[in-house]
Image 1 (cartoon, helix red, strand yellow):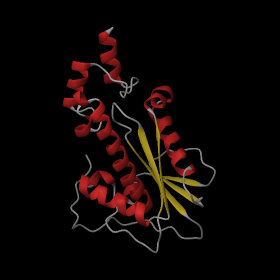
Image 2: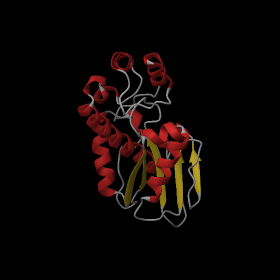
Image 3: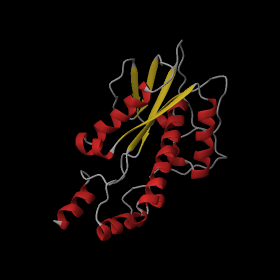
Image 4: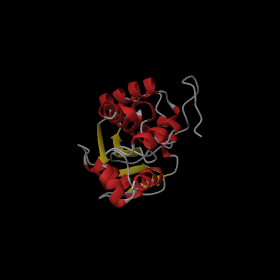
Length: 209
């Protein structure tokens, strides 16, 4: 379980990346849910306009995440958000779909980075050097920024999905397999936004046959 840090605590120690050229941080949101796309963000921060409070998005409350996401979009040199669809998740698998979303996010940047730093232990196929950093969202400010932007963007997508399919409660659980979501899935079956390759959804579909 992630720790819930208060805003009064000091920010985590950061890796310092030196040398010429732009550094992009990349992270994703939505690998674990049963519904909705997986979203990735790539961010190149501007050293002249530092942003206080950047950290792993999972340790922040919704209001703080939204404030920081807006600040990242306003102050970063550039920011790109991309996604892989439910169909791509089911066709490729969640890992490959996540890497696809990450590659799309990097390719969508207005500026071309010299190096890309990716949260986790796997890298998408990119045209420039890249490094995977386990828990990078707690060590590299640009990755923290990307994690926040990706999370806020995906939460907004799931809130919109809730308007289309209110019976599932997407606005509350964001597609994660909570008890309420699983109960709704059993009661109503799967909608078009559900990932059919994921076990709980597949089980409901098989039971309905």
